[in-house]
Length: 311
Ligand code: BDR
Ligand code: CA
Image 1 (cartoon, rainbow, N blue to C red):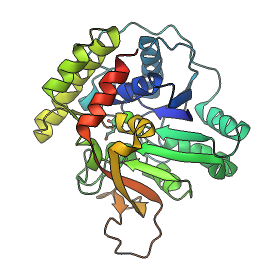
Image 2: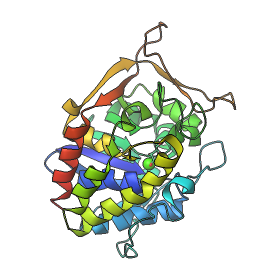
Image 3: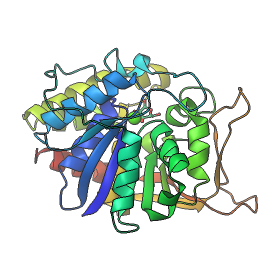
Image 4: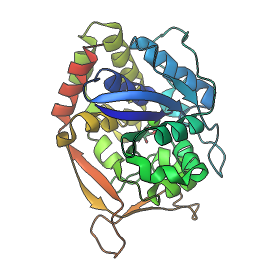
């Protein structure tokens, strides 16, 4: 199984991504979960991460709180998408499992340093503040990280928080810039692919039909979460952005993309956080990421439903 650290700002779609990983121990070994400020402030994201692990019955997963604000900007949150708690929809109990002592950034650094080189991958599902801070504090870890598989950015789908920026990158563009320049092998799940992973009525019914606490909670989370995209974009259902990351680790064959150069706009207020992907290869800039553009959506939902049934 691939050893990973999930860095997250739950978020209903983060929650589903975590559940998918925890349900797939043959392919994914979740060493720990690190929370970051994003969809909602850090106290809520670190709380929500624990709520989800308890829902999954995996109370031994160490969970750490990380950075409470972006590197150089004020925190922008997304309650308009995820609700006041970040996890609106189901009525889940308060967490009883502990938050670990210590900072998420130190946990990431120590875990990568103490493992064999290139045996640990990072899976960021929120703003890249924790990851960039770890790289700044311990530049030696860059060459020890196997891969970063992240949700963020957009090319043809442009933006969802500004006309040209996707939320995770927009919240901390400086952090994203550090990550994309790190030389680490990066796989990107941008809006181009995640807007094709839509929870239609039929797919939502399939979650609910599992008739387990997890299946019902996922149906309720995606019911809540879909309002925003349906009203705003006329979308057919909730886009499962972050689960594309964990699904990729299990079934990379469900996804297709291109190795391209991706740079982050960090200067212009107008296009701040834009992921400038050289999809057509019109520059000489060397590719630094595999930029995913499409997925087999039916295969993705079949996998997700089958795995959630195991929890
Ligand atoms: C990303 O932003 C958050 O709202 C979601 O959890 C996802 O990680 C989509 O733009
Ligand atoms: Ca997220």
